[in-house]
Length: 433
Image (tube, rainbow, N blue to C red; front, side, top):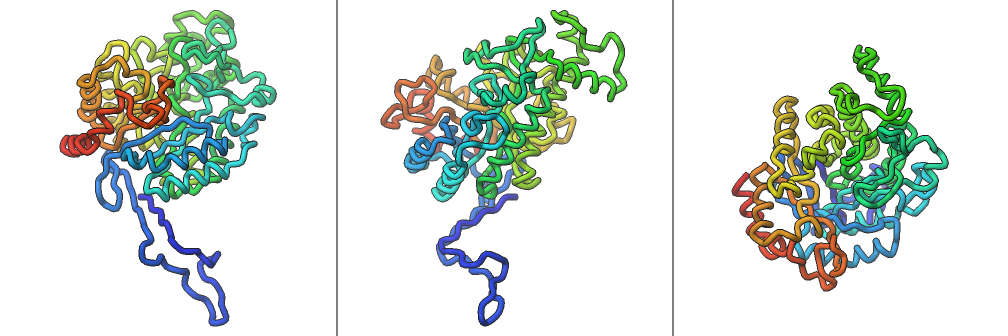
């Protein structure tokens, strides 16, 4: 259970008891009008002060190291609140904060801390996430490559990899590289230390943890060493199980069950370590959300190895954010993703919240009509989503196809039925779960 209190007075002591001429006195108590919020997540649902609440989560994509952009967002918080958003999810890109890539932010963290306070004071909750990978929009600080020139991801042909799948052409990092993971954890801890973690509803590990869907990853020396150590630790070190010595790596190994079991377990290790970095600062009871990227089945092995193995070893999560929740190729519910989450919850006794990553975003659902959009939302309810819906990118830009709102903050069609009928949707969710 999480608690946070906003005091409407100046706290004039710095320790549990302050000494005066008359001796120790008790700390000041909240004056009338001070507000307290107590929240908890249980049975897949969110409760505030004992009352169940279905959350409307906004993910505004900004540079939170840029004071001007942060101040602009603070000025817009009343707009977010008027649209009934309960949570503002702050996605912090590593390269925005840390140019030399040592994991220690070069930019001041005070604007981010001020934003967290401002969101909470408006009666909403901040969540804090990071984007520390270089697939799908993230980037690695330029200085990191100088420090770790061997940290590149290598494909099955022995080539360094660029993000061709999402079109950003960024150099892809190997998650097997220990220097990368240690540096990222240092960055996460610095972010968490800068803010009042008692006001953060939940923390997110890096966005969409995966290898890649269109490229075979990763066959770097770091990956080879990690896999060999795993084989030895599990008494599986036989010639037929080892990674081939040269390139190209044959398809028989790309699809080898043990290799893909290892890849899935290591992906979970990466995510669990991110969660541990948050909790080293915020405490062991901090809530952590993880994206489960189970897109079209044709790409699943390349993205996550064995998906059930990944989920089974995902021990640090409280909230599983399914991605894709809707199969954008088949244009139907991505049932297999939910089924896998449910399977592991049953087999492992996990008390996970089921949610979605980007319930709607500005670009993926524009081809759907109003009734189809409603059907997509109702599918999430049928799948067990009782926590909240996440919307990306919550910004006002008519020309930006990823934005959900026009310049004047009127909703674009994808978000219109949500905004205009939010009370009805909440009633439907609460009645269904």
